[in-house]
Image (tube, rainbow, N blue to C red; front, side, top):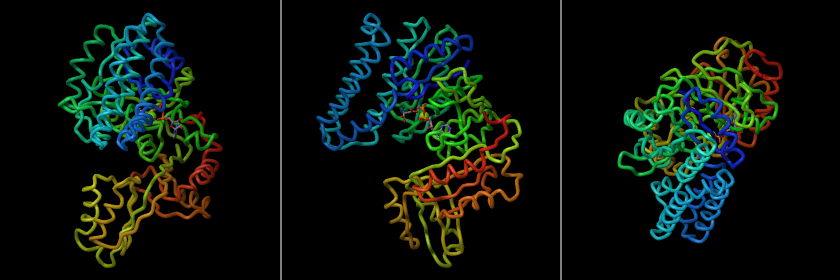
Length: 457
Ligand code: ADP
Ligand code: ASP
Ligand code: MG
């Protein structure tokens, strides 16, 4: 069997969902399980409703919800025609009434908790998966809607809940496998799950890719397909640099580094389940299905180019901890990292000197509290609006002088931190966020104007 995941733009309207049905029909012989995101931008809109309700703005929350309701009803009726639409109309009504009840509840208690945020954020996938499933049935595909909250079991870390694989796998075996053996196509929402007690959770923004990988590993898929709005993994974000080229093949390790350092095309957690079961992941374009996309596997053909791609991760804060002579004291670094751990704040990059430690974290609302706690140990300063730029490629290992070439090309740019060697396949550095377009396009011109045609399209 295979898993096919369609992102927000791939299901953004009736026309897009119709294309999805055609793509899935082409793969029927391979026993597909289909995962869908919310319609494009829907999750942002749901979070805006939640925020409005949390701020006590009932009218705005309900107005946004009404617009979402109408968009889904219109999409469903365009896809299904009157007869079939009538069948799922009641289901959709029920979902949107539940959403309105939740929003009113948030206004009434005057507080938006992470738990209610997750309940609200998950509606996009709840309804998109029902619409896609119904439209498949109308197009002669044997679809069965599966409620992801019944199968994807997570812990209770709302907004970035951690899937509990053992329980999830046993539920998949009970609810999804039998459908496959009866020749049906399970259609599920990505991104959402529930705790053991059935409280709705989400697994982090962009998490539908991760859902697809969890299903792929849990059901022993032969392949995981991530269908999106670009031709595959590219040498850099095509939105940032139109010259970006498609990467034909890339290793799990390289793709994971790129995803981690900002290549939004894949959620950073996606590759872990695939690596564990050695399942190839393909990134494909739902608007250009004939294109062969990018194949991500354990090993890739040797490339003559040094780098495979450049990623940039914005919204980074650099935290500097300065403690003369304290730094080398036994246990000091541990106490610094404990502060980040206590705030459940992951650290991306680290650099130390005799008197200071600098780390980067994703900008978030806990920074001030983290700085206050670090301030008890040493002097602290922090600065936001930074970005990590990361060049990835397995050939970095064996190419002398490559860092010199990178930094010479951007010698007019202020570099705040540099890191190379942790994985031996990436060179990363921190710059001001505003410099990202210039730096990325300059490095892209330098390293990707002439590339190995075996590896790049
Ligand atoms: P989906 O809704 O299908 O999950 P996303 O918006 O999450 O799609 O991811 C696709 C987007 O990722 C592309 O439109 C592109 O702008 C962005 N992107 C960033 N880096 C890369 C890259 N290296 N290769 C391809 N796309 C990238
Ligand atoms: N709809 C969710 C989001 O926008 C999950 C996803 O699309 O992968 O974050
Ligand atoms: Mg995505």
